[in-house]
Length: 156
Image (tube, rainbow, N blue to C red; front, top):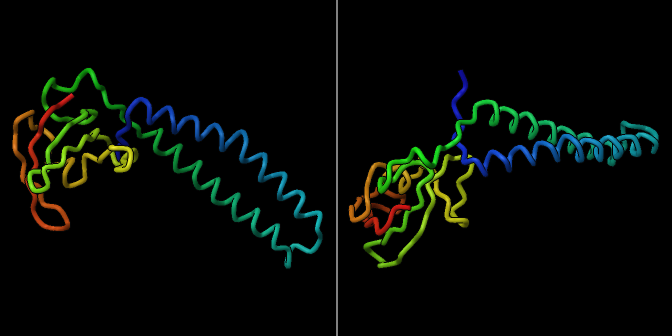
């Protein structure tokens, strides 16, 4: 059996929208580009045709990838998260004890992780270390740069 893909409800909806766009819009665009490129003549030396076929392969690959993710998707049940305990779907405010900086993260599955958007994976060093802890806990985290400690300020 394939590995489950952990998603938020919103993440699943975004994947479904992307899949629909690729199937309904991008496939039609690429088909038209291939048809136009064929009209240029000799396919053996037709750069437009080669480029369109390569793009078609990339789109089809993305479609297969998204369909697989959706097939094995497990949606984070926000209401099932233990109140006050960091779990998948939790929003956490932490203090980096070395810098004193306050940071906010949402703990999500790897598919939706985006540090710039404040979404870290449950498999990342910090995300994994926070799981199961509560506000007020100080957690030691092994990160690529060494070891750091963080204090959980708030769990939402």
